[in-house]
Amino acid sequence: MTFEELQIDEKLLEAISYMRFEKASPIQEQAIPLALEGHDLLACAQTGTGKTATFLIPILQDLVKNGSQGFTSLIIVPTRELAIQIDQELQGFSYFTDTTSKAVYGGDKGTDWDSQKLAFTEGTNVIIATPGRLMAHLRLGYVSMKNLRHLVLDEADRMLDMGFIDDIRQILSYVPPKRQTMLFSATMAPEIQKLATTILHEPKIVSIAIAKPAEGVKQSAYMAYPHQKVDLITHILEQNPDYDSIIIFTSTKKNIHSIVSAIKKKIRNVTIDGISSDFEQAEREEVLLRFRAKQTRVLVATDVLSRGIDIKGINLVINFDVPRDAADYVHRVGRTARADAKGEAITFISDLDIPKFHKIEHLIERSVDKVPLPQELGEAPEWKEYQPKPKIHHGSNQKNGGKRKFFYRKKKNGSKENKGKVE
Ligand code: ADP
Ligand code: MG
Image (cartoon, rainbow, N blue to C red; front, side, top):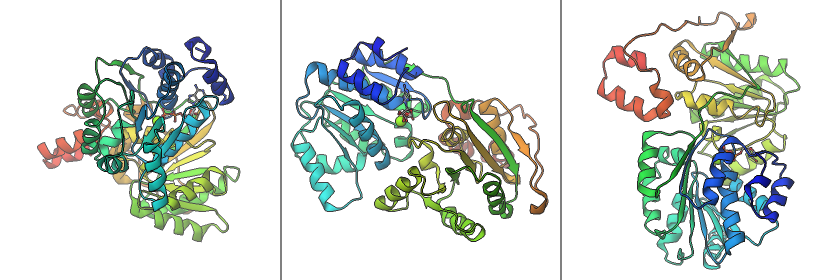
């Protein structure tokens, strides 16, 4: 489906074409017409499928068609990076319109607070905000929501994971009841459905099936003990000199520094940075900017970066460890080979990670090639094929996006036997 078929304003069509969007993605094709009709929306599709445009285009169309007086549209997002990214995409789509917008997020200098306050008091049309900072402004009493007609919760699953539910509920108490509400999530976890029933009014539901890494991604894995992993990275980087944009994912923030410094010691002149939620805001932006500009070849990151953030042209994703949550594998691998490009994803599996990798293979419905470790790195742990155990519901991880369900099950059935199977 082309965007022309959506019957939206010429000004938007022109901007869309400048942004080189030719065909609507599946979520866009299904959800944009419903949103244009003014319905509330619960939309579920994995990372990288074009959810941002799915809510921005209908919002902008409404503003162009029905006027944009004051603060009309609020988009709530989990992270500052995402707020900035959405604001940039919005500026692209709204280039030929009068729409004004502002990203509002915390952790910065006082001047930013003032410019954010000004955005509210001057009636900027679209505010893209993180929950904590938005609440801080709301409490001070100068934010008027009387013109508000669109509310978007983007990455709602991530926001729940990050514990923003109380902030969100408080924010909702400020928002006028008559509005269009759109809730976006990468997973249809039960918590999301619950949230949806409390904030959406007769929503249309669009859910695009999860979650196989794109065809263009070559996936493989090495069995490796933890002490072999840095040497293995060195080997891979040396084997692929033309890969200029590489992300190494690790589940633990505290690993980042040690991985970065170990690789620096092994490879002379490598450009490498680390990034995690522990970094200062300015530092994170700086690191991302350098990586996007390809001044940094290798970025070591936690899963915070695996969702939402869009970076083009990543050649290779290395999973330094197997993600706890099988869905995070899909998110991580989805950082490469975006929009039909080619890419590669390599996962390091230690002996303890084998059960977690089985769950991933189950989720993506295929087995991933296990490449033998280079001889000079020594003996690798042995891969074990999966032995199905009848009591476990293998589908549960897929349905629930993981964590909460496991936590619950572990608590309830804390026997050794069960733990072994679940983890
Ligand atoms: P999601 O929110 O689902 O993770 P995004 O909205 O961030 O995905 O989109 C991912 C990338 O795909 C972005 O770079 C976006 O500009 C691009 N994109 C989205 N829709 C289209 C489209 N219809 N045609 C081309 N590129 C698109
Ligand atoms: Mg998104």
